[in-house]
Image (cartoon, rainbow, N blue to C red; front, top):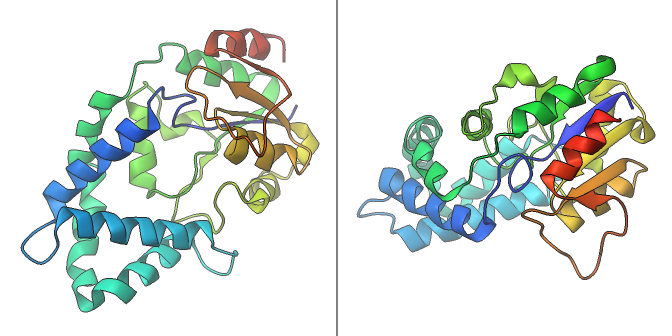
Length: 233
C-alpha cells in the first residue's frame, strides 16, 4: 500500500451522528440566528446547501456550491452571515466536542499508517471548511501535520458517496486506487464508494453506519482490530 485514507466522524473520532448534528446546529444557531433568521430556518438552509455540495459535479469547489445555494435563499444577507459562520469553526464549534468520545488509539493508528513511507490522508467528507476539519481532529490529539492533506469544502469539488471524490484523492497523491487502503465507518459513503473504484477497505464497526442497499462483506472490525491490521500492513 502506498496510501492510507482515514474517515473522521465515527471512525477516528467516535460519535453518534445524530447527536453530533443536533449539537452542531444548536451551537451554530447561537452565533448566526437573530430576529431575521430562526434556528429552524437556518437548519433548512444549511441542509439545502449541503445537498448542493453532495450533488456537485466537479465544476466548482464545494465551498462555492454551498454559498451559491445559500445566497439563492437568503439574498444579500448572506454577506453578513458568511463571516459569522467562518468564525464559528474556531470558537463555538469546540462546544460540540461534548457529544463526541475520546479515542486514545487515533494517533497510534495514524502513525502506523504512515510507516513504510505511506502517505496518510484525512478523507473526511468535505462538507466543512478546513477550520472545521482541523478543530475536530484536535479533539483526538491530531493536527494537520499528521496528514499529507485534509479534504475540505475549500479544496474539493466532490463529496462522498460519489466515487469521484476518491478518484480525485488518488490523482492528488499520484497513486492508483488499488494502492490505497481506506478506513471508514459508513458502508455506503466509505466502503461502497471507495471499493467501487478498486480501493482496499476496512470498516470500523464501533460507530458503524449500515446501508441495506450496499452492505459491506469485506474486512471489518473494532478500532482495536484496525490497529492490529495496520501493524501488519
